[in-house]
Length: 452
Ligand code: NDP
Image (cartoon, rainbow, N blue to C red):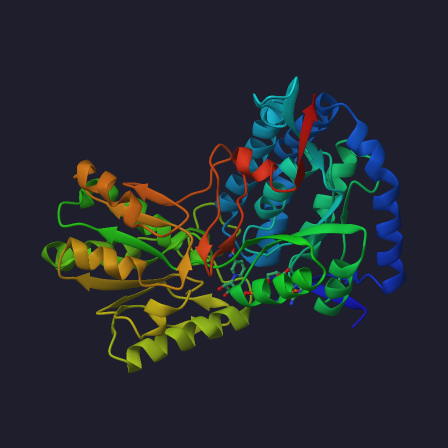
């Protein structure tokens, strides 16, 4: 197929046709990125930071337009699309303000006259990105990586080609030299060749575990560094002393925001037995209050899934969990790409709702005999992106830190990304970190300089 159509998953309407890149247009883009790389890396860091400030300004100026594009292409409720664009501007502001310090030479006292680490860009970095936060995931990569002096090539998900093109244009409009940030619309085979190409120095992927294994294999064969931000099956542990009146809404949001399509969503609610029934009845009541509807309406909280096949996969995961003994207390109807907010109770290991990532508005509720059992269930996952704990016992929470095997541990709040904090997982959730100082130092040569 030489072109792809973007499609509105809510209306089913075809939106726009986009021409795919061919081998020759990809080669041309690689040449352009190579020609600009040196000058870009040699630009004073302050100038690169100023350009990032321009990106932030444009994002805010155009937030309605970009939010509409997100909502049209992948069905995110419009208020959440606007919030996504605002968060992108925040990440740009963070790196625009801090990148110079984060990339400054780091002096280390040794027996040399002077020794330090200098952080040099690697070159062109390939970013393979998903559709669930089609602007945020890209900006989260591009803001630090370009500011460190690298160039970037984006291979976005097939269902958000308009977002990919808009992002490419955003950097040009902000004043970035042509070739600093380009988008390629291509299939997996072309991406495999691209990873092998000498111009590409490293790859970052946000996506499924399957995509991670495929891309890491190709990158490994070619000795290219990878950062992988893959799926998650985050536990939300609810101790018997949790303040449900204060935090239930947060827990609900942790599962249902972005219509449940978030890698860091709370997917398994592991609830201590004393509070189990109370939790279920409050969670059902709160879920029933969520406003379902047209993603373009400003008060809609639950829209549709980004593609119909994603809703089909989710339905099959729920049905198989029911066959294995889970109880359905709410939802489980599907209509096209729409999937009704769903709650399963009596979920145990061995059911898809416990073992697999469920990418949609499905809450799996699991009963724990006690706190120790809850922690053991939480760690019983092949994923390790982030864990949440709700308790009034902060001392117990602090003692648990070493026992949590995930990349993040949030107490009395939902796992969320923040430009100031590192973000990334363990186990099948991938490796490497994005955001913060850790993120900007992923795609640099940490060069040891020793002056005798
Ligand atoms: P994928 O992981 O297949 O897609 C994510 C990105 O990776 C897309 O750009 C996709 O391109 C690309 N990709 C996938 N495989 C390859 C490959 N072998 N070579 C090059 N590029 C590749 O996710 P899906 O959209 O199919 O969603 C399936 C499941 O993945 C979800 O249900 C969810 O569980 C998980 N997921 C997790 C995300 C997260 O934030 N961690 C985000 C999205 C999905 P293309 O669109 O061309 O296939």
